[in-house]
Image (cartoon, rainbow, N blue to C red; front, side, top):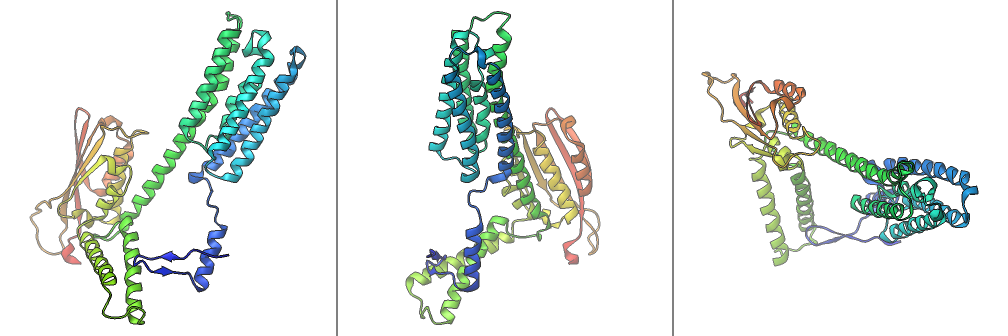
Length: 414
């Protein structure tokens, strides 16, 4: 078996060697590239079990209604197709992982469609689809088998088409009256609602996990130095550092002759420029800047003003309290409103009357939130602000303004 070589920043082809290369290949071979993201595989298993129980219930009704079918063969064939679709969808979903190929999804829907047509054909002479249909009602529940493997819109479209087809059949075939209206409505709801509820559950779960992951990543900035590069910049610095080491090693071992060729010299100059830019940025940007800009949620709603980079003077407990308060102000609703914003201004340092070394510095922090009333602010937000310092709040319309007096250590003592 051959392995593709890697190309580093300098454009040099590097082939893995030795023990590390073997470990890399072993890890790559054992890792499952199709593993479902965000843990939705467990929801998929649960949904498949619910679909299976629904199929058992529907099949039991089919057996009970067997003597009343004038032509039971189409109904039996519809159940065979539905069982094949359910079993095949479950098995294939365990194999392909977190994304079902389009052609398999099309085959799955084709089986469901054929099952619905055959079932409606078998009960068409009863003029009461809601009371006699079985597999066509379970087809809506069968969509739960692939609900985590395809997009929400695709599942909703398939569910809507199934619901419209069943509703049309009921209106055309059934003689609606107060006596048989309830079974028709119940059948339609039993067919359509599972797919809609499943899509809402999966969407909410994915968003919840993404928000929590975002919070965990942002929380890592709390223990960062006063001036530091962010998570994204750290990866870029690691790449630049590796490229610089490889260049210097190649010069030291004689693999790259001196003077450098124009192309290699240009690459070296680019590396030096990028390193200088990152070092300069690292002397201006604080942990709070990286927490806001590198968060998908905070970056959309929070505006930070910290000209003196004073947020870096806060200790870990104060940082955690400030970040938690900002986060809870932004995420009060399940989905942040487009009109909800949080403006954070740190500094300038307020005069305290004492300038000697050893005295605390007073760093004022002003937090202005729009789009949320004070009575909608969670109590844990105020508890988090107490860890930052003494605070006072004022409200006006749908805006909350919070002034925090944060006492920090004098950097001159360090």
